[in-house]
Image 1 (cartoon, rainbow, N blue to C red):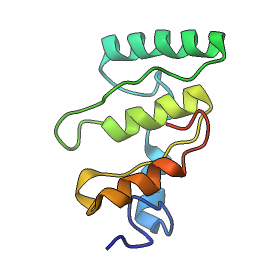
Image 2 (image 1 turned 90 degrees about the vertical axis):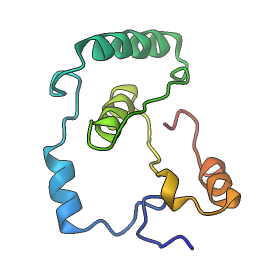
Image 3 (image 1 turned 45 degrees about the vertical axis):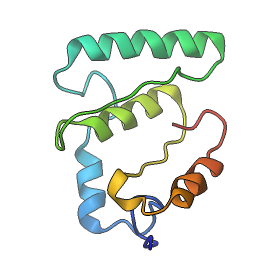
Image 4 (image 1 turned 120 degrees about the vertical axis):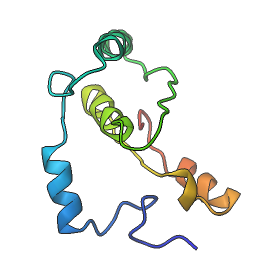
Length: 109
């Protein structure tokens, strides 16, 4: 069962979560490393924004702790888009993913 304060809902952030999110990078300039990735993503974002379109699909993958969530948040911020976050382990049923996808707004990441 999905808890209300799980990653799926995003509600009820703890003080520790708020503190961590306050020190996370909010732009590509603040994001350390991955210069090639940042350059490519900046190009994709500018192209999408100049077309007035959404960002093309991209998959960010890798082991825990490498900055995937932070990068996704930076991308959303640069696109002036909302972001919905989840993780595989919290999706217990196929309906859980369907619920997230049906709540997406246009341009959401």
